[in-house]
Length: 281
Image (cartoon, rainbow, N blue to C red; front, side, top):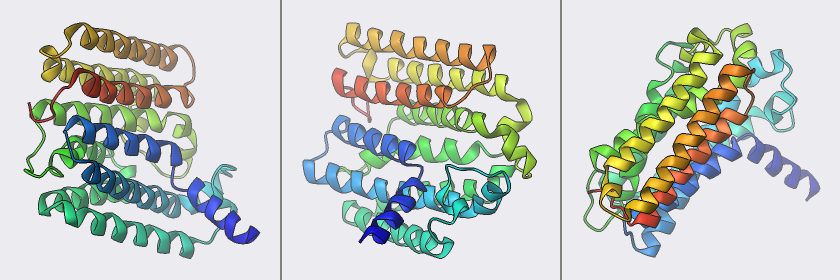
């Protein structure tokens, strides 16, 4: 039992649990904003969570050799706490679960979920080391609002402003997430877009992405719904962006910029729920 529990813990730690949970909570909030039935929200949320598990595990499985080379103590697969074979089995099973759970919600959601997961896996290999490393984040996060609207009884793609907000935040997530690992990545041959433009400009552009998401939401349904609440959220998110760019520009950024980006994404999702904004408006 103890060994099995240790294996589960090692696998969970290899899923990038923080981002996985944030994206799952975002999906839940978007489902509420889209007015989905409770069972649809539950099914969608679990399906997206399964997809995130597969994405995180595949990332660490692909990177295990590089993580060993730079002696990453926070990576269970690099430490050998769990086998690569086990990680790949669970990653594949998670993809299957994500698609099977998506199927009852309709063909549109199933297709969008498949594209979202495939895009993220393409980042893991081979796009991570290219100037196009940001593209999967634009695609996957841009589709995130549509996962909610396509799960409705009358499915539809999310409004352009919602997709723009998701893509902007996706760009910010990518640019901020790699900041602590820039040196280790470059030593092992990874030169994505953030590596090419440097830590300061990556942090600055991540802040632009946060503000872009806030502007998109503000110009969407929030402009007509609970305007005072909407402006308060907008001001807070812009404040988060200012803090993020300050952290990136004045000192070597750690995880703080990434946490600020994810926090901003959650704030915008809460804003949609609080103001009653519709994702298809």
